[in-house]
Length: 371
Image 1 (cartoon, rainbow, N blue to C red):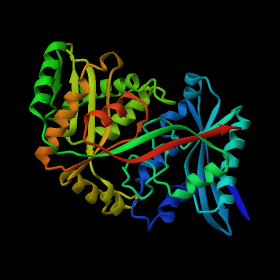
Image 2: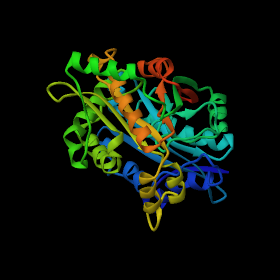
Image 3: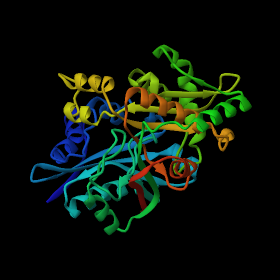
Image 4: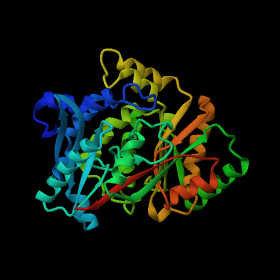
């Protein structure tokens, strides 16, 4: 018999966070999340709870945990997109359709009680959280910022009558390919024409004056993308605190106008996959060592975030920061770059497909239906 109950107390929360590590411990492509990050997201420390509500559930059978799920209602997203949706996230379960349906039924129940008329996911609280499931190439290389899921997750959700609401594409590309002279000349002309310059940050403290602009630029650049809603000032403050101390300065690209206002940006991080696996969710006693070492010695990067303000799109701004990122990769002898998921059909995907030597890696999707 399967029972699904709300998470109550710190002991239950630890079980909730640890479950996928036990479920996928022998899966080579699975990357454990750091436990303290999960605690910050799933407890009242998360500033998103000012405009979100949530309930966490554990599924048990014969005294063993067999699944978990978070039911989330993001009021800002619903208001912005004129919808009444409950989200499912942190959704992991053994290969058992009854466990799958028991957990989703709790999310649906939570949504209906709160007046929702549809369910969608997997989502987090904001678009900075992990979202969307892989729908092909299930054994493909994962990013630390993306969700892992086996094939049966998708098989079960399609069996339950859910439809794909939006698709994402990830790419693999050579990072150290030579930069053609004509690209350098073209970028110089673009910067002269529009009075732009590329900011090369030398000291970590020099990032902070641009950090708030960076996240506000994300808000503006991504505002028309599926289910995106601008981050609040408190959320931005948390992300600055989390991201900035760990970035490699040579892989931070800011393009600014003559007034020093950010118009385009690129942020990449070293490949931390193996380090996260060795840490197995824990910074201590030795997880920090593996992660710190990975920041200093790497031959692969993840293209974490990039974008151009809407009013500056189609002016070649993206080429400026991609070119600088390419040159940094050559200096570091980085041979491979992986993109984060890009919504199929938007401008970023068109750029990857037409202007760079990319190979499609995997597609991801959000699923949903009426309740």
